[in-house]
Amino acid sequence: MRAVVITGTSTGIGRASALALDEMGMHVYAGVRRPEDGDALRSSGSRRLTPVIIDVTDTASIRAARDLVAERVGDAGLTGLVNNAGTTVPCPAAYLPLDVFRRQLEINLTGHLAVIQAFLPLLRAAHGRIVNVSSVGGRVGAPLMACYAAAKHGLEGLSDSLRLELGPLGVHVAVIEPGFIASAMPGKLERDADAWLRQLPQEGRDTYGRQLAAIAAKVGKEATTGSPPDVVAGAVVHALTSSRPRVRYPVGAGAKRLLTLHRVLADRWMDRIIGHATGYSMKP
Ligand SMILES: NC(=O)c1ccc[n+]([C@@H]2O[C@H](COP(=O)([O-])OP(=O)(O)OC[C@H]3O[C@@H](n4cnc5c(N)ncnc54)[C@H](OP(=O)(O)O)[C@@H]3O)[C@@H](O)[C@H]2O)c1
Image (cartoon, rainbow, N blue to C red; front, side, top):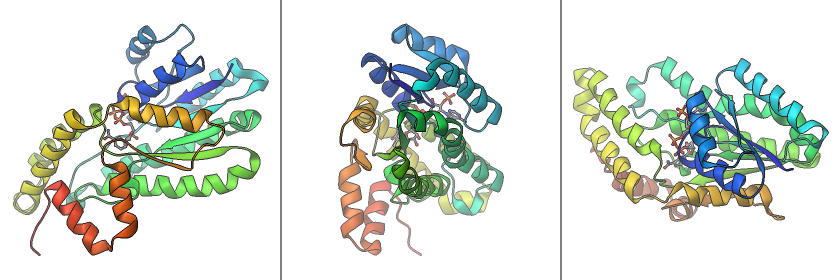
């Protein structure tokens, strides 16, 4: 039985991926932070699907999940690990509290490495695969999204190093780079942007208020017009099961176009495109 661990399966891409892999007959260990999210997921999947409590910032929960999975899979090891958990904080870098920045790096970057380290012996035993869910934001920065850009750029670099280190040991590492996806995330970002706006001092509101509201509105719109999470789940399935897995999977609305432009255009042109796309344009 092929066994896979996925983090962040309560909603969105993680949930869609867990259910897609479950439907293919894999034994999915679905990471959630709350038992009730595990119950909800289980009611949509097969009896095989096993929710496990994983908070990627909590070493004890990672260790407990690893022990449970290790006991269940035995010598067969683990076929795949999908590092999907993620959050985003929309705030001008100038006003970003450093503890918030550190927490973002912990969830979106360091936590993934913690999970990878914990499950690596099981992955090596099965010549399994690691799939890291990054973002187009891991290659292209966006204004007022410094936390996210820093963490996701870091995840891209971490994935490149891991691929080179682990490839010779039989463990393939792939990166998924979603564009605009209609998950819970855009709604959370829109809500959080509003909260951040109210927290800013008057000077910050005067300088960034309009742009923060514009970006929140733009992202909020993507919640309805973006690609469904199933599209990303398809890429996750390919990365885990194809005989020729790719290294990078740009997927979903806007991803390929944006990354192609990023590759061929000068930075200044890219800045204009990002400024236009996010509604963020400000005379110096
Ligand atoms: N939506 C997009 O447009 C988009 C675009 C590019 C990349 N992505 C990436 O795709 C991944 C999934 O995002 P999504 O769009 O599916 O958003 P989502 O619906 O908000 O899902 C995020 C998941 O991460 C979990 N999570 C948050 N903090 C966690 C922690 N400390 N430990 C473990 N799990 C945690 C959440 O669990 P709780 O319910 O417990 O909070 C939730 O299950 C993220 O890495 C995101 O950066 C999304």
